[in-house]
Image 1 (cartoon, one colour):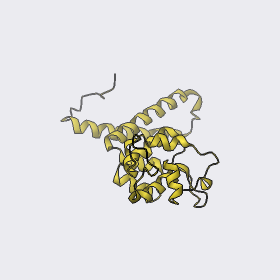
Image 2 (spheres, rainbow, N blue to C red):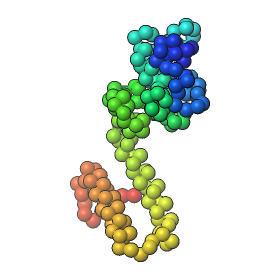
Image 3 (tube, helix red, strand yellow):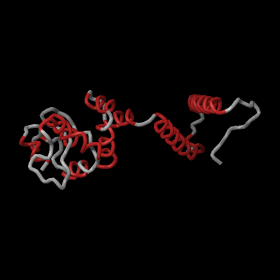
Image 4 (cartoon, rainbow, N blue to C red):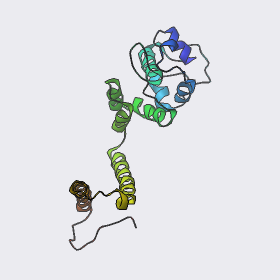
Length: 186
């Protein structure tokens, strides 16, 4: 019913969608998410009505449809490329005023989602990603090192950045006993 209402209101035309396939599941799964449901103020499923989105949310409904399906006429790809994780990200973005503003101004979904995340979560995710990438690099050490000075300099730069982060975290947590070794996971 939401799709049909969007078409009746003229804020969406399924023939204008960016991709050939219309993934209905994106919309109907998204409507079950609190952020998306609140964004367009959709009526609960139990209240069957031909117009589940109130008239004052017409513009938001149009935005949602373009984010889900894109628009060939406007040359806009959908921000939801795959249901997971993009739909979850869109849900978080529309529930956060600053993230929503970023998405509306043309920032891609991943970056707009970052705005909605607490800095501590982003910091931890970045560290986990760096650890995973460095573990992969270490696996290629014997066969991937070409023996050039530039490779050594690159690793030195990475080591400096890692040490800076470590020492700053350590400084924040302790008085700083210089004899203390690194604190590790193990």
